[in-house]
Image (cartoon, rainbow, N blue to C red):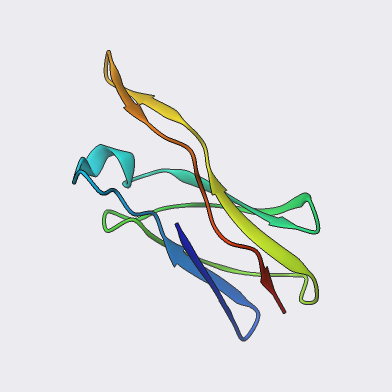
Length: 85
């Protein structure tokens, strides 16, 4: 997962190496600032997300949870590298 911080906005995308689209569409990504959840955003069909941040300074990390899609398909948890503003 990638995370970019620009002008008070967190943006990024959930990548799926095997191309299983259900693992990137509609995933709720949590944005953490200094260890606390500050925003939640759902990914679009392309796996991209964007959310305006109310807080500016700090260390941010984006996390997508592990999901089970359908009866048996597993989408692994994804976590971005920490970014500072």
